[in-house]
Amino acid sequence: MTAPQNPITRAIWDGTLPIKFSLDGTEAAELGAKILVEPYFIEAPRCSYFPLLTSQIRKYFVDMALNFIGDDAEIWYDVDGIPLKWHYPIGLLFDLHTGYRPDSNSPPPLPWPVTVHFKNFPLDKLIRAQAIDATQDFFMSMIKEADFLRNGSTKKVMNLSKNDQTQLWDGLWSSSSQKYRTENYDRFWSVNYRLVINDGQSPRHIPLRIYLPDNCNPLTLGEVLHQILPDLFPSSLPTENAFAAPVIHGVIPQLNIPIIWASQNLCYPDNFLHIVVLLGT
Amino acid sequence: MSNTQTYPKQYPFLTRQEFEVAAKSFLEQSKNVVGEGWIWIEHEKLKGFGYLSRKMIIQKVNDSSNEFKNEDITPLTTDDEQFDQIEEVEDPGVLNTSLETAVEYLIVDYHIIYSTSYKVPVLYFNAYHNDGTPLTNDEIYSCLIQPSRLEDIKIAGFHGGISQQDHPTLLIPFYYLHPCETATLMKSIVDIPRSTKSNSDYNILQNKISIEGYVRSWLSLVGNVVGLKIEIDYFL
Image (cartoon, each protein chain N blue to C red):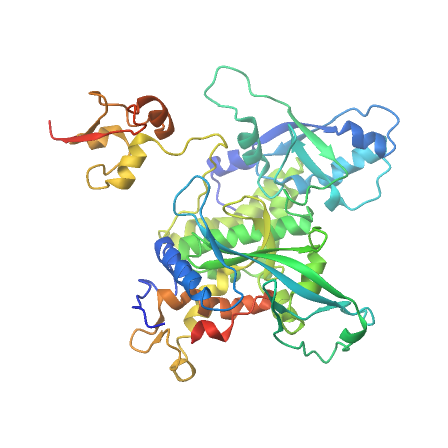
């Protein structure tokens, strides 16, 4: 069975990121590197995972200089000192860590600089056994969870034949090979198509995850009003609340101001934010 | 427990609000059981993402004479002052050498967290040696899992019923028991009418377990696997 020709899923499958892998200098010296090792460049598929690249990265650095006989699972990656969650897809990690806005005028920070570590695996920050098996395990539990969200059970995934399961993973696993890109796309999507199309049934829920920036201020004035007074403020967005308006110091403030900012700047001398709600116009 | 009971709208599933009621009822019940140290922790920033947490000290018994499984456990209830032995491990493949080996302890953090996807509680845990180093994957299996349950765990799911993932609230690695069979399990226990009739959580007409009794019933089924036993006092 071949995958249906879909230019969108194909373009996403073909999406790549140039990555520049450099050694951590201190570790390199500890591991016997006598020379400064040149970085290693890979054009990695956005849909792939770091552990699937580890063996070739390891080979390069060991061939060049390193005296490393440990397991692939001890190797890990960081960006600006933050360990990369290897169980996230590479493209997601790039979007998450660079914070690069595609609508900005500046060029994207490419090739993406990533540091490779051969020592000191941060057990408190990363899921361990960064290895191909563990990646497959994690990938399959995500697939199962998605199936559960769509159908209320994991039957579709659990009922996949052994051969189909292998095809799904092998297609993805081999996706970093430029040579067989079409073959791998077909292997993966011929199985995945049945899962995402869901046999033509509309899904109960859509599997999705939202990633918030660390420094985001989650609560705005509108959200607070919406939480406390859902009848008066059916949405936290200004346009849909036309019939109720909050008034502070004789002014209707914007609903998207952070509540912390409002508290620090708009409170009365008694430190309270006094909000009068007016109805109708 | 003669308090009023309510029932989940979509048993065996819980909504997040129902989970919070279930968890807090369990917390109340735990206060009547000697030595239980559960607490409720809220998310730092977001409302409605709280979870139950408990730290326990568990005894690990080394058994160096057995190469097949070189460690074996004897779980204990473990508030600081009271160490009651829960259960002798009975496994014909394991020699009983507990008398001649040094007693070691593990520190285990148990968290009960709601899964938005599976709509059931999930048991998360991390285990440490008494010097603070975390257990390796192999040690989790050899020091924490009841030997009699090892096979069940290993064949469950794709690569075993226990794996690591990011803690949904703390975003650091934690072990967890796969929740994909939890709903089936919670359903199966109310589908057997005879043995559960005497259980006060069980409502024959509704064929459900109450929200208030959900966590203790669920935990009595899954907790044992990873050294967390639910005292009978929870059901009295």
